[in-house]
Amino acid sequence: MERRTIGATALAVGAVGLGCMPMNWAYSASRQRGEESVRAVHRALDLGVSLLDTADMYGPFTNELLLGRVLKERRSDAFVSTKVGLLVGDQHIVANGRPGYVKRACDASLRRLQTDVIDLYQLHRADPEVPVEETWGAMAELVRAGKVRALGLCAVGARSARRPGARLHDATVRQLERVQQVFPVSAVEAELSVWSPEALRTLLPWCVSRGVGFLAAMPLGNGFLTGTLTPGQGFEPEDLRARHPRFTAEMMAANQPIVAGLRRIAARHGDAVTPAQVALAWVLAQGPHVVPVPGTKQERWVSENASAAGLRLTEQDLAEVRGLPAAQGSWE
Image (cartoon, rainbow, N blue to C red; front, top):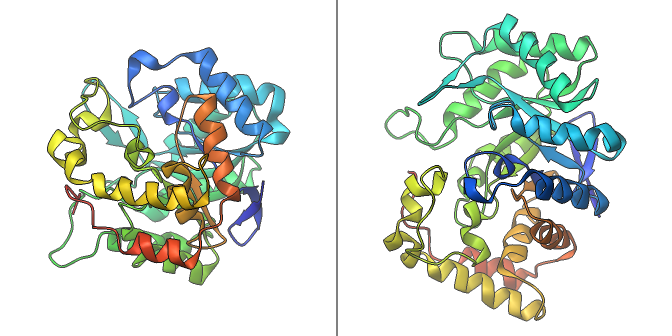
């Protein structure tokens, strides 16, 4: 697989990563099976999908434990990205960016992942009660201690408080400007997909101008862009899509032209090419330091997603994607 670099330190990873969250959290709990997920991670590493993206809050904790089972055997094959800064309660999620907590959380993640170093340690969300510079400073100390190789920041949530007239990622850019003064940012993780291209406006250009890698979260639109979901099919209560405005039956039906467009492009590249692969190839085409991180828990989808790294879209394809209708049910 093609290799791409993250950050000024040129950390090399496979062009397509693996989002591990669905294995333990947020999606269809009835279909979460540990052994199947372990096989999926092994398959990813076999194919050169080296970036494994997790977080201590996924589960919570169980996602890191699952990856630890694989890393114990194959640490040299993997690039491990995990996150800190969010605590999961029974009915809520809260931020904790206190320096002492960050250091304890890192040690706990290292134990669960069965490794002595985390390749990319990301701040999941800034704590509104703690200056982000203090949290980032504690994370920088972990780099100096040899427990972490590089630092990253996840974009502020789309529904967070925004000033009138502000663009989606303005708050994230402000945070990045602040933490960059403390210690270099190696990567930013944010949603980027055919139906959520907002990061192209300001966030990705900020990263490109500073040599910062970009991890594209949800590049398959939470599964919608694969073309495998049916409007009105329903989701399990714990599934995040059950509460997502784009996954009502009405909005899923309204957004079918986007999937139809991806199918047309896929057909031009061969019978075996899928809408999901076109969606991932579009993300890859946004720049050499962009790494899509599609989430899955099944080997078959890992293999399909990895194959997208070899799909090259033409200018006609890219123009056709630009001409697709904007998604309805947007976060904005």
